[in-house]
Length: 344
Image 1 (cartoon, rainbow, N blue to C red):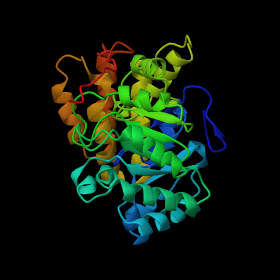
Image 2: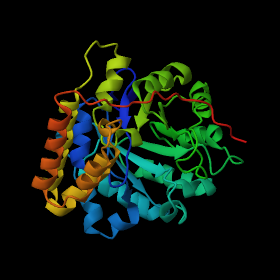
Image 3: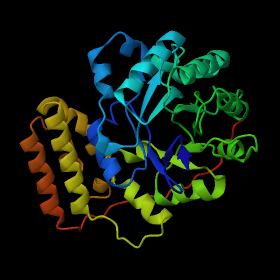
Image 4: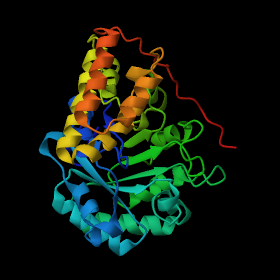
């Protein structure tokens, strides 16, 4: 699979752009463990144009994480074009347009998935951004605004005609937010359309190596994108690649996974500061699958999420390691499957 001049090889697996999650430290870990491409947190075009410091900082990328995409969102065409030019100057490999974020503060203002209610505007923004930059421009969107407005099969062709070089489809509507099951049948329909010649990237409910394999085999997508299943588990890319590539490498041990989370903590503290670095790491500690299935773990979890100093938090993590013994944690992993969700 290729986007522009980038050759990803067969069945690439991408890290989805996620606010307050895909910062540079987390991206580097995901890249290390097999992500084919990573994306920054999504960037507000309006804030970027206004030179808001916290937004400009999101453009910081590293050569170690390439190929890397920077994703922007907004509802104003001029701001999106200007922001795209600023992003291009930051030197990513891909510029992605976010027409899929469902949260109220974005979609409710007409940006992100809100653009699904104004398709002509979406197409105008896409067309003008493509014309304004030399980098490959891609789009991420959803099936439609709601179950009564499933526009993706027509929209995919329209976006392709605007000049984008790949399309990521999240298999839910905006109305679904992140509830229910992702419906991959329409993603597969877009991919099978003989008029579609750009890569189609599937997104939604990729939670395990098995669901990743099913996405490629059942729906024929060119690539998949993994989102929430990466929380506290950047090694999921290694697990997926082992299955896709039919590698016989064994799974990482509990100790190895705990080492990765401790490294993420240190990276965040060094990158930001102790207080905010710990807060930034809590999402991953709360969501990581390595602590699931451990009896009577709740008091330890509470202490872990209340810790305010790195040494204190590291001590709790190390005590957990010693309590469980080397590699003796009984991790509980559910095998999920991608299923067809009713669009009625």
